[in-house]
Length: 436
Image (cartoon, rainbow, N blue to C red):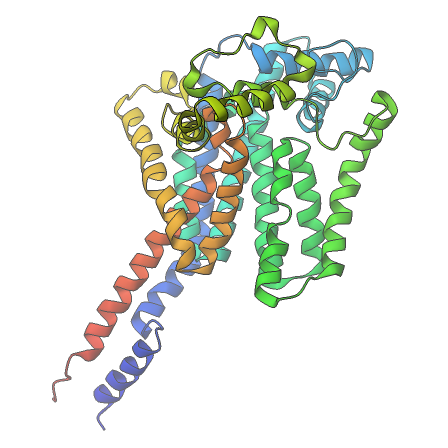
């Protein structure tokens, strides 16, 4: 058989097995090598865009939570009192972000607060760049380098992920720790090494100490391990749980000693929960008459009464109503849009957000039935969505869910490209070879 026919025969066999034929594989290897350098370029662009923003935009004076966090950090240093919006000790917010601010204040001082806030924003740029790196690594492990690069590229230019670097709030540090924990969860499912259980447990605890809702994702890798192997890995679970508990222990001990009670996460969920029991923002809550120590109980009573009086409205509000309010009522990028000098770019960023929502959410519901990696991402997304639907629907709360939509969209894009390449390769292999 002539060599040309032998090559054609081998290509046909490889194509039928669903593997790329040699020319495609060769280009894939070239991309695999270059991707290592492309991610460095993406991360450099990500940091520069954020650094340019925090260095040149004239931020308004901080207020509300941003102001309260800085006052709290100064109070911890000067009076040794851990109290949010209070001169008395409390546990209204977990300690991750306040203690980070304390560290910055001690190293850089806070007499010149504008300079110190600038330093914190530079840290935020680094945190968000690290977040994008872990997003890339998750995409590589679940799909391929191309998917990781696409997801990282989306996050690099995503408006809210640029805007939050200018805020003195928890989001940047949280996203870094959270996606690092998710990355090690992927490693747990794929490799199941004790070291990864320990690292994932510790990172999940650190992220929980910044944003308490992280605790809900700690069971995800063990659920997938059980489904995959039909057994509980009790030793590995113990490693992860121990690492989580060790990192949480100082917070638990502090609360027992200072407040005389065990507090798992924080005391601060009553207000956003009660605020979330106001269907379609009709201002039906008599805030001036509210007992602030029993906001959760009042919220539960409002839900019970609402379901009894008008179940259709209340069910819609706690499902599609809050989802639309969080994802579509606006885009969490206010000051960044003010900073932009080329306004058409704002339109592009708004459309990118809507693209991720309108395409990413349906794909999150459909793709888990087609490929396993999407199940992992969809479980995280819908777990977070379910928890956030219990509270006030702030656009800020979508920030922890968007990475999963970015990864799902990136995975589908590369899957479609891969199918297209296989179809083209199959067509070429099926063509008759002309004899010389």
